[in-house]
Image 1: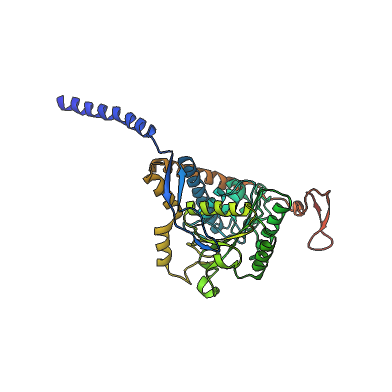
Image 2: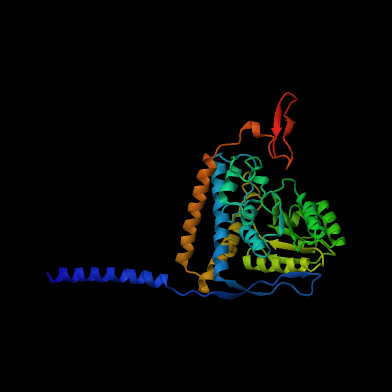
Length: 397
């Protein structure tokens, strides 16, 4: 009897302690902010660059972590849907876990953190992450990938052609978005708005002649344009050393000042973007940024990504430089968040992605008669000829 009473007492004692421990975790006092040292940027034609220390608030840290995890999980889901043949055609992903390009989460989230919502951004076909950070929902993005009516381009744009407010795609022709970005910056200056345009391209597109033409015009007219080369070291299947005589992409503007930035660190990207945006807003003209990143997988879903580099190289970068892990370690070690709290965010993000995927697979496809819709804006309806002269479609704005 005594042993049984003692056992009951221990059980009751343990039960009474558990709620207390939960209260202790819930009432834990986190720091409001923390200061971090970040990697110094390499400079071209600049006497001073972005700061080498920065302050991260708890609020911003949690927001960045959630956004980067969302981009990564969204792309993992897109990978799965593509392999299930639910997503068709081209699909260029931007997560850094098992798929594409760089660990682009730090790039797209860091760039957005350094500008205003009223600023502008244009990029190439690896655009899903930027579409999300510019304000569209995961549901709209996945529905666009699956070609459904609820997609951000009504299911007609697919992976390469997504748009949002002050976000101009998503462009399929390599390097062709760079002159367009210079044109957007010209519009900002012409209209007298205190806005800048972020114009992104990859190391594979950096040798395009039209990019240098855009540099020249932007410098002549002092356009508020931030040219951004996302250098992931491999343009399709070719390393930068085999593709370019000069791999110092931040110096490629010659007469345009440049920065080389650690693109795997969201805080480095944020501070460099703030610096570049302030430079452009001051009326000094364009500036060039090179974001040094990496892609863990192939160029696209059809590229295994291991025929031109070793698995050991990929694994080394993944284990040492993953941007989400870097932010997570900083926040936990500086008492900005707990491991348990970040795990809860992971669970919430996974549920959001699963819900969006269910919508993206159940939403109807646009009907054939809407093929001519949304070609023009604010125009009265008119007929558009189809693949032959006997097929007519209605164009509706």
